[in-house]
Image (tube, rainbow, N blue to C red; front, side, top):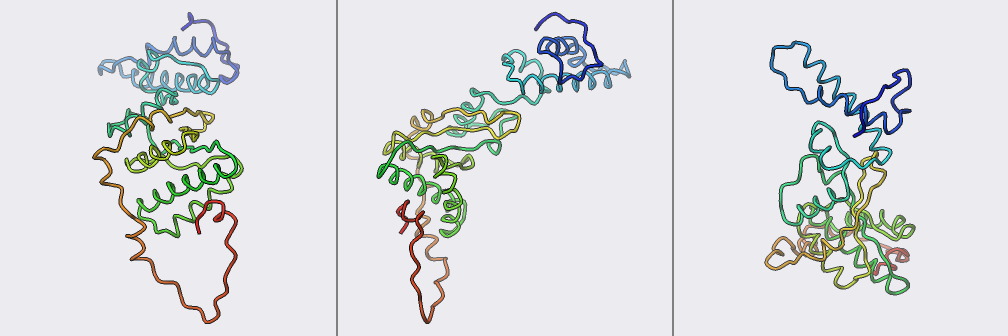
Amino acid sequence: MPQALAIDRTVPMDQWSEIQLLSQIQRLTPDALEMVDGMDCTAPTRIEHAREEIRIAVDLLQLRGYPFDFAARQKLKFINWLPTQVDMRMMIRGLLQGEQLEDGMFPGDYRLEIIANSYGQDASAQYKAMGEIIIAQTLRLGTDQREGARTLIDQIPRAIHTGKFEITVPVGRAMWLDLADHLKSFPATNVNLRCTIPQSKGLTVSIKDLIESITGDGQRTDRTDHNAANAATLPAPLASKTPKPRPLPWYLRLLGLT
């Protein structure tokens, strides 16, 4: 970090230059890392003030995209650091290997983007396969087929407009195995991880290679036939005296869900 320099506190901090913000962090770091020994009653207040000032400066720099190095992130552990692409890939690697995640990494802060890269009939087959994965995941979470279909239908306008489905990050292994199988059949599909923390500005990273590297040998015991299991519990449709056939919606025709 640069040498400390004089700062005009009459100017709001969000108008400071990058050099000024870094200098402020450098100047306050000794106080922020001071250990309380009980001899100085003013120490807790001084430490908390320094940490709060540093938090503000770091947040402003992160919003501007400043690349803090690993040493700074390790030194200032009281900061809520925004994730990097490396952090995001390490989180997915940990999920795939069943390891404990690093502090501050929460799967709920991210979304999985399954992106189609085909046209014509190939695109229809690719979308159908992607939709089947999503329905299978909803069934694994205890949702019946109709709710799974509703989840998929909610995704269709986004998929048609953007060419991708977006889902929560799966914690269990079964969906990762489904995605690995999908990539074998549709290698043009891309899989990205997107951060939803507002300050991250939608930071994304490709995790396709991580998914392609996993294998399902001896790991598929959690992949059950939920279609058969749920079919027995779903109520039979009510009888109608004058049934009227309805035209099949276009989105179901597109996905082959007939």
